[in-house]
Length: 263
Image (tube, rainbow, N blue to C red; front, top):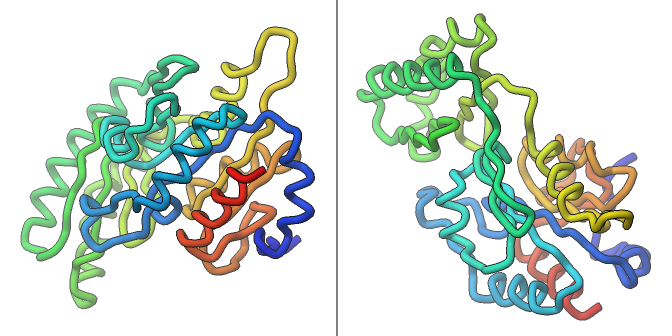
């Protein structure tokens, strides 16, 4: 079934949300903050921060921000007390429910270290490439690379990771003008959401109703996890997605959060 525009479907969704205890899960880049050429300059607008703080103070909605950024980075960029924060697509989590760090095998960590050195060496002649070391994963950003150099950058990443991919130690996933290089483990944003929901459930009670909003391919794992028991929202132009609803851009996310505050 094709995703429906959330704001057009608001009256229907509002009925589901009105009397529930909610757990709101949010991606960061492309969801709470627009995608920018320099990822270090992706900041929350005052409008978005105000909506998030209002939701938090209302007390009916737990909130988690789960990002591909490192835990330290995403916690610093949002910086609102009482939130749960997930870094490296959920490989590391910290919040009211406790702390979690996925036990990445040592051979995968060694592979990441080897790949980092090789990619740095091979891509050093390519202007505009930025390699971000996030501890438990790597991201090769090529948003500022000239079009004619893109194939060179992609080939260098492919060659640097080939052996470790064949061994099943790491995986490489395309992102938005980036390559994500991660340990090959059975953990993703969907499992992170499930972990947080289980930890937030009061003994003998029902878990909060999950509501997930994200714009990236990695968010599809979370959409699949909660599709039948919550609300899922893709951010961007309508496309093939596991989400039930979509919002067109970060501005519409802010509008949605404002409506959520009012109910």
